[in-house]
Amino acid sequence: MSTPTHIGIIMDGNGRWAEALGHNRLFGHVRGARVAKNIIEGCAARGIKFLTLFAFSTENWLRPSEEVSLLMRLLFLRLNRERSNLIRNNIKFRCIGNLERLPLEVRNTVLKTVRETDHCTGMTLTFALSYGGRQEITGAVRDIAQLVKSGRLDPDEITTEMVAGHMESAFLPDPDLIIRTSGESRLSNFFLWSAAYSELLIVEKMWPAFTLTDLDAAIQEYDGRERRFGRTSAQLPASSSEPTSEL
Image 1 (cartoon, rainbow, N blue to C red):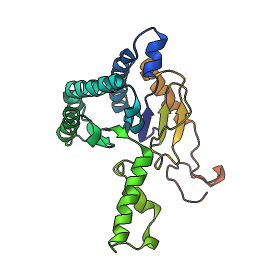
Image 2: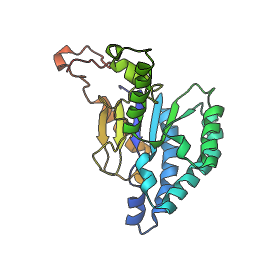
Image 3: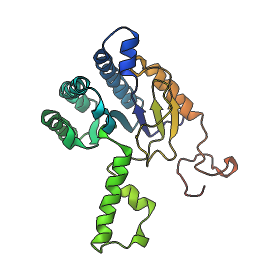
Image 4: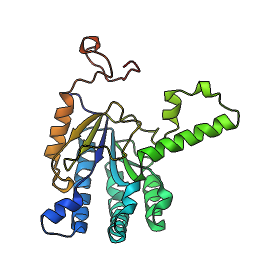
């Protein structure tokens, strides 16, 4: 079976799942955090090398303050509780996004988890926190513009590889598979640059109902897809996983 190297997950539907059951939206976020723990450990056990969870977008700051506060508190508690488990499972924790917007105690907890798992050599787990794909691209363009302005770079030397290298997520390979729960068919500002050739899988289930069985089904679905990267089927070698610039 062809297993994706990097899986990205848009964990959508916590609030709607809770409301459908007659609960407060906050209950859905608590349940969603438990599901995230299962999926993280499940991906590590299945040999996935990189897992990125879209945990909080730049647009999520627009949600009601009570919900935002609960999400920040939940993040703080879960990271403190699960840090030792990450180390025990040899999982390296990383983050992308504007961490400066996080409450101080949350930001310190995030950075502490990054530091204390830095030695881990197994799966890399990345949380996209206060993250937006457009903002990431804008940051890369700004950095490159500064190089041009200072005379250290000729505009003609700018390549797609250079732009990719200035992305905050440059330490990650492009996601092979992006899963979105809740049936919504959009990226919602997630990995807008690196998702150019990602396989997209829309799952109708809300995130709190997502299971390891669903994860296995997603990996099996990925295995059955032909990734051509702009080429024809006849051009593909027996095993191809590298993109080409030819469209």
